[in-house]
Length: 175
Length: 251
Image 1: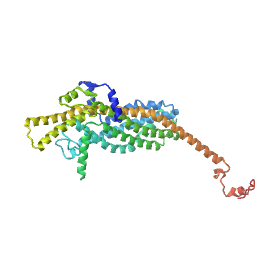
Image 2: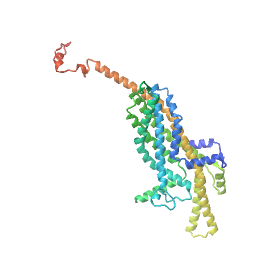
Image 3: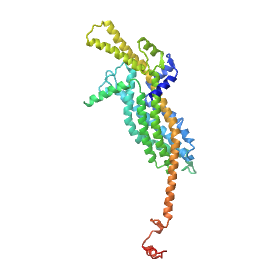
């Protein structure tokens, strides 16, 4: 794998940024994009592609692909909402309890002893990393308790609204 | 070793490992997140009574194929692209004017196999070793030279922490995000749908064969299980057993 990476690196032309927007964007991206933002980016881009792939899937019958499309949308929305909420919450919690400098002992629970105030980028990355690790524990719970039931609820709602045929009297006939 | 010291060691190690960027952590949490989410989704489909049997026959294999392909492609594609973008930064292929100027001024050579980050750390180690050797041997170093070495160490550390690491870390995270988007939103859906459709057809065909076998068994006169309407009871038992049978078969 390393040799293939080296070969690809050799093929790519050199690029030297001279302080312009490209360089600023890369540094901004590294500083501000952590796991919650990453989850939202994946979720939004998924909504723009996956439902269409499922809706136009000719390998299955029409009703199955419609239900599959509804379920994909439900899964993306539920997964992105819970995924972002869990990750952001744990990172915020760690940041509140990993302060540098003068602070109460409890507020320095997650403070690393080798961190210094003149390393703001390094310390932010550390806080994000610890927050992400604890978020895994949160994801174990929300994956079963919230993610799946919410996906089912949204799937059933979308299926009822867009897949089941409406009949007289305001009721829906199962497709 | 007390719990407190174990926790302190954990925090110190985590700081040293992740202070330069989150590329590795995004990969780990992304992969674990997909594993947990997929397990939850499978359970959700299986327990959703609003879905028909035929729909579940497609959705469960689809979800399993989705999970397997998503996790594998997420891990390998994201890792590959992440490593590629990081290599582009550390090899100096994609760099900034500031990084090139700093390396030139401080005599830091960018060699094959040794990234810029490693070269900066190596320079600091060499300067630190000079100070340590002189301290141990109690050799005389004039304060000006001592200050120069200390200042250079500080300058390289500051540059590494506040200038080079954000750039390399930024490219690494960008690679992670691009890899995650490509694997989750393009590769996985295109590969899993045909697999899930094939599994559904297999499951429906198998169910059809099973139903045919069951029908044949209930209709056959030699079936060991009598149909419900012809079940023997005290009324028809006598009539049944007294009926003449063909052939010479004796029970």
